[in-house]
Amino acid sequence: MTSIPISSNARLDGLVAIVTGGTGGIGRAVCTTLAAAGAKVVAADLHEGTAAMAPGVEFLHCDVTSRTATEAAIDQVMAQHGRIDVLVLCAGAIAKTHLQDSEDAEWQAMLDVNLMGVVNPLRKIYPIMVQAGGGKVVALGSIAAKIGGVASGPAYVAAKSAVHGLMKWVAKSGAQHGVFANTIAPGPVETPMWQTVTGRAPPSANDSVPLRRFGQPEDIAQAILFLCSPASNWITGTVLDVNGGMLMD
Image 1 (cartoon, rainbow, N blue to C red):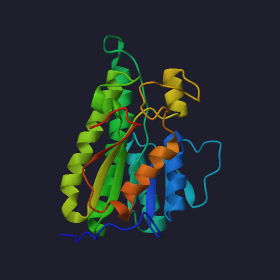
Image 2: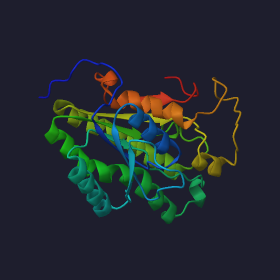
Image 3: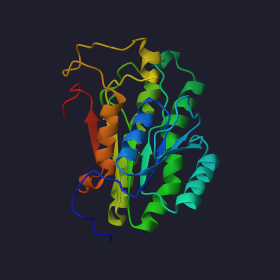
C-alpha cells in the first residue's frame, strides 16, 4: 500500500497534467492555473481555439468520446513526458430539452461527452497512475446532479450524476495505490456554454446565489488546483460544491 504524505502546499512543480476539454471556458482557466503552479500541462481537446495557449501549456487534439483516439493521445503524452501525475476531466456538453421532448440522439450525445468522456481517459490513465504509485484525478460534475438541474435537462443531469458515482468508485479503488479521485460540482459559471443554454449575457445577476454573482472559470480552476495538489492529501472521494452558496450541505 502506498504511503500518502501529509498535506502540504498547492504546488505542482515538475508534474505532468492532462486537462480534457482544455480549451473550453473552464478548461482553459484550469490549464493556466495548473501551469502557474508549476505543472507541465497538456490541453486535450477537439478544438485548439482562437487564443494561444498559456506558457507551460501545450495543445493536443483529442476526441474523448472515442476510446481509440483517447488512448492514442495518452500514449503520445507518455511518449513525450514519460509520466502523467494529474488528470482533470473538463470536457462536457449541456442540453436543456425536457424529458418528454428528448430524443435518443440527445441522450446518447450527453452520455458520450459527459460520461464516456470521463470513462475513456480513466480506463487508460488509472492503471498508469496505479503503476506509478499515485496520482490525482478531478472531474467536473455539476450542481445539477445534486439538485436535479438548474437550466439543464434530464439527460445532462443523468450523465453528471453518473460521473459523481464513478469518481467515488475510482477513489475507493485507488486509495490503496495513492490515486486520489474527487469531483467539483460547480454552480452556474459564466462560460460560452452556459450563456448559450441560458441566453444570459455577462454580467449576470441571480437572486438565488447568496454570494450575489455567478461563478467565473477562475473560481472553479482554483478549487481544482487545490484538489490536484499536495494541499489535499487527505481528501478523496468527495464532491466539492463551488456554487456561491446555492447549495449548502
